[in-house]
Image (tube, rainbow, N blue to C red):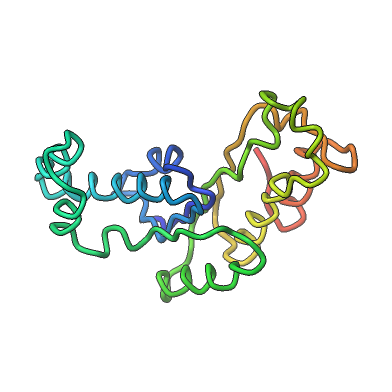
Length: 192
């Protein structure tokens, strides 16, 4: 089984592709948006109940026939304890690493998946985003992804983003994707 983390998880779209519990074990999901974290929790609960062949409490909750409290009361806490609701930033990186290290124990991290926020790169809204580009910190959030790769040296990573990244130019006027590829290359990864 491969130990993986999901950074910039969102509501878990990319996570779903790695939900095969015979091959992948999620060490954690990191997401700052509370509503997205609630979706991640609910998906964890769904897969737990599916595994024990008891999906009726999940469907009762989804259909509004049962409360969230009732659903959560029948699920062990560890089922949702891998979700870290926190913004990835300079001030939180150390505590995020501590959380991951604690959950890994003596095991290695095999993979990192994630999609750094794509709104800054998206073709949709690019014209209106031009005015705030100089102060848009989302442009360089991918650098935290590099920090995770540099610290844990996983066997693989999946960096998901939008088509607009292909043509997006950063603040220096350089194609950002070229810069990202060079930076991953500089820490020992080949982009394919």
